[in-house]
Image 1 (cartoon, one colour):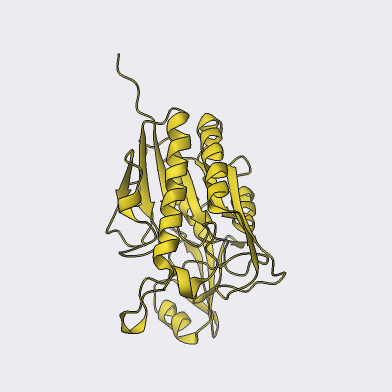
Image 2: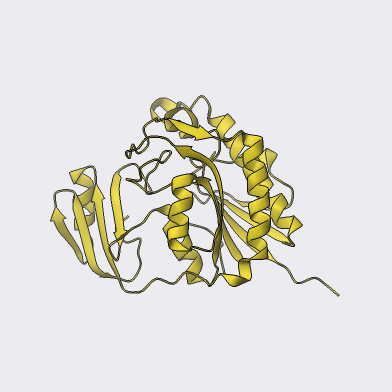
Amino acid sequence: MSKTPLKIYVVCDLEGVAGVVDHYQQCQWQVAGGWYAPYLAQARRLATLELNALVEGALAAGVTEVVAWDGHGNFPGGLDIELLHPACRLVMGAGDGGPIALDERFAGLFQLGLHAMAGSPKAVMAHSFSGSLVGYWVNEMPVGEIWMNCYTAGLVNVPFVFLSGDRAAAEEGRQIVPEIMVAVVKEGLAETAVGLAVAPALSLAPEKAREIIRAAAYQAVAGMDRIPPYRPQQPFHLRAQFNDERLAEQRAGRPNVIRLDAVTVAIEQAEHPWLLL
């Protein structure tokens, strides 16, 4: 008798990985002139090994299929496929437009290496979608990439069950779904919000971080069926504040968008929460 497939989907980012603390030196794959961050290869290796630890924990708990999406932009992204666990398949060439190929066949959404939203204090490289957003609100709730991934999974009835990253990201995830399993691999030490600027942080050793992720992934699989998909109330009231007037002006030309001030725009009733991005 064949075993019923148990599939999980993993959204991967780079800023929430243990040992990754400097956006300019570790997270930028290309800047003006084709320059690559000098420690990008190291960061990608650390991220891939964290993903492998998640896969190991999930397989031990009974998962039969793992699909991961590299959410750190276009190629080369935030993962090194040569180091990828053989039981994991990787969505490639999809850029950062959202979890590609995530559908109702998956039993749970896992978010690995995530960072907190823009404006978060005591965070490591906190930002929302890009460095140009000062803040993004859905129904007056400040949200970032963690929320948007969770919402996207809920659209296809997939529950958000696991998050790894810095402590601020873990707390943000639990504000959305309190029952998720978290693996905290580092924490920011700056009392104020510093965005993508370099600031003091306390990180676990990569090997220890992988140990915690492996155990938390196992526990997340065991409790997946107790967490319902996330379904926020619709329609959505959206508000976005930018650090550049030109970005607000670009959005102001879209249907139903209201200009609140030089850098802030809103939509009173939106069908989808990403319409101001």
